[in-house]
Amino acid sequence: MRDPRTLTMLFLLLALATLPTQAQTYPFTNYSDGAAPVTSQIADRDGNLYGTIFGGDSVICENEDNFCGAVYKPNPAAGKGLMVHTKFGGQILGFDIDQSGTEGIFSEYVAEQGGKNLVATETFDQKTGKILKVVAKQNETENDYVTEGVFGNHLGVVLYQHVVNNQVENHFLTMNPLDANKFTGKWTPPVKQNYILWSISNTQGTNDVAVLELAQQGGTYAYLYNSNVAANTFGKPFPFNDPNLGSSPLLAYDTQTNQGVLAGSNGSPTTNPILATVDLAKGKVREFTAQGVGTVNGLAVDSATGTACFTTQGGPFVPPMIEFYNLAKQTGFGVALPGGNIGLDVEFDPIHKLFLAAAYDGTFSILVYDEKGNLKETIPGFNLPISPTLIALNPGQRQGYVFGNNFAQSLQSFTY
Image: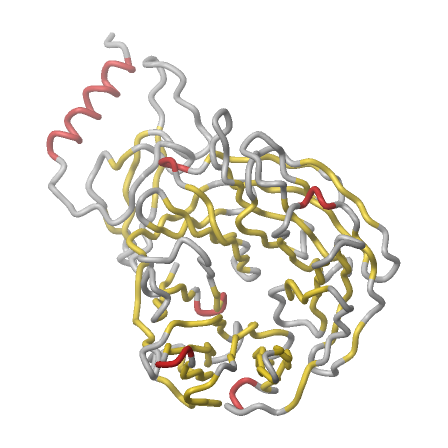
């Protein structure tokens, strides 16, 4: 009787020999998503395509005596979509989209003579990319508009930096709702003297967000509090005094536990990052050390499961990683990013329970992971700036937006 392993290899070689030449739309990484397709795709009775790959899934082929594989179903809808171009050809200063709506928002500036600028804020249609309204515009000015994001329930926030006697006054203008396509009020966070409003958590679908203020001239490292942006109300500011999170800590908000979530490091390629939670009702702080090393470039939280996900840049002995942690248990793991990628921004899709990370290995791509650390999908071919590499998601449509070129002068949609 023939050795069944020999027959397996024979069928594998025959499949490879008869495999027609096809364009590769998905780069298999030889990790949990498998090494390579080994057969042509076939259709079921409903027309759905399936194929087989060598390796992959939760199986590890440790030596030549093990022959393993998996079945995959390609996602023909995944990939790059339409472009959104600024009205005046300027550089984008912040953008976001309404996760449960139809509009997006960005601000732009165009350098003019004499050190002054054209500045504007515009809304656009997520489906067509068409500019819907120039909400505000100034010519030959030192002032700026910067889109902070969409928060709560369909509420846009734009920072208006007004220069008076060479001093900058910050005003946070609101659009409630975003599709009103006009400024409707102000948000007035109680920023302390010698502090700056460093970050607002990217939180939609609930009333509150988390807010982080960073010290500029000594004193307590940071303060955190929550805010109902629509109501313009604020919780008690609580101190956080661990400077080991570095000069650029990242902020997320666990809506189920009312906790601000911080991640950061001192930037050393041999230092582990720190993950911290701050109870925004009582001020209790909990910290623990993560596994990766280097700068933390992106952070997102699944509030339903208490899972934090972030990317670390890596160092000489530890590769760049995407990491997953249970905030309550302070336990988790890291997964090496495929192909030498460096992970950048991370965003969470709460409908499909997916974390999406921007990544760079000479070219930019979007990597899609589940909460078990399995790479589900790679969407290649983006042309992003190194910083910032923001992702804005509309989970209900399985659609997102990133910058459209490395000068941040347009937006590129994608599906996943």
